[in-house]
Amino acid sequence: MTTTKTEEDIDVKLIKHIQEGLPVTKTPYKDIGDALGMTEDEVIQRLKKLLDAGKIRRLAASIAHRKIGIDANAMCVWKVPRERVDEVGKIMAGFEEVTHCYERPTYPDWEYNVFTMIHGYTDAECESVIQAIKEKTGLTENVILYSEKEFKKVGVRI
Amino acid sequence: MILCDTDRKILHRLQSNLPLVSRPFLELSKELGIDEDTIIERIKFMIEKGYVRRLAPIINTQAMGREATLAAIKVPEERIDEVSAIINGYSGVSHNYLRKGRNIHIPYNMWFTMSAKDDEELHATLKEIENRTGLTVRSLPTIKKYKIGVRFKIY
Image (cartoon, rainbow over all chains, first blue to last red):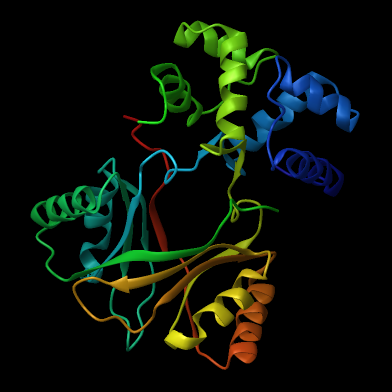
């Protein structure tokens, strides 16, 4: 599918307008359209296309997880043999508490190649998930990195 | 717990897509058995109280043509405030944490995610951070994604 520059520009304008938050009204898409000089239907169709194309992952709420009691977040990094990364990545992704799971590069002073983010109500909950991952995968070399201080946390903006 | 049952129900549902119909909250009211006005009022309340950061599109940086990475840096204890202020000053930085290894010593302590309009801008910005801080920035971009989707279990 080819999109002209103009189409993309309109999409960017739409996203920029709503990335700080949709209007919480009975007819949010109509209200966005009114502000941007589009029809309600055009707003809906554009958002649908952006979602289908994966440019928008979700049109959803971002929760301040710490504020509602989900206080613990552990970044757990793993040394995984290259040929097992795919198998192990899928197992890890299957845990509900694992919110992110990525393969990343290694360096001479950094040999951990698989990163998991685990969110829970307590450190103990995170650790029990890590224990379960170890049992299910047979992996033994990992480090748990707890956040000691949050300097910045904002959603990605364009 | 801070949230009532109604709020929890709404919050749980709002982590998935808002329906793309003229009256999305009316659609939710049918799903949840909570009336439209109450849903709107509770969402506004949760945004105002800061339980919900925003109800908005969650952008896929890469699909939008942007490049992103996780970067790690070893910052001497006494320079943590200074260096975090430099890093946070970049609008492409979405997360920045001080992290320490619980069971094993690790060579970095400050971890941040950064996106930029392309690879060139990303590397130039990381380089600029190195120049301004005099510290080495280790870039750990994603090779493969197995999961991304922060949805929380709401008890």
